[in-house]
Length: 187
Image (cartoon, rainbow, N blue to C red; front, top):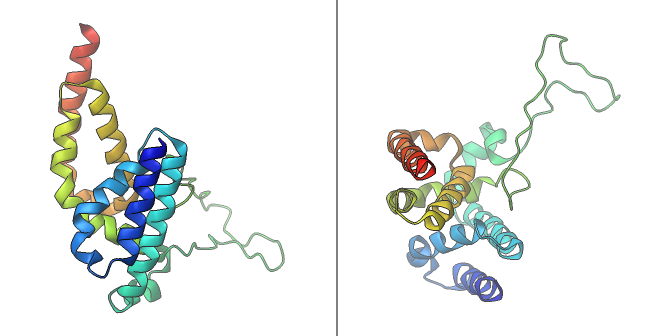
């Protein structure tokens, strides 16, 4: 775990300070995402902090591209609605028929929804890693399948509704993995 933690710190240095970091981003980001799915909490937390920093950096560097989303869709930027509640007088102004908001639980190390920049960054790089992740999930080694599944889950936290673009191949892989798991269980 200490070596993996040092590796995440090195990745953070490279991905935030190198002049040509955008050229290396597609090769380095999968390692950060793997660290976000690591078994050691310290490594996961360091990766989550790095992803937040990378997301903030992405927002600064691509402000013009993200301006419409940040202005007209604040919920996608990370600003939450008040959901019908007026906190100025402590009263609830929602209609009695309104449903309670859903509570989203994020897997560790994510305590809340990732920022817009981090979500866009992962979304842009996901097509390059989805096939290797799914191939590993269908492999013959159970430990590797579990790690790949955790890595996919970490990516899905960032993809949100963008995962629908990959729905067919994800569903096919899930069916195959379930068949493999069932076969292993019955033996």
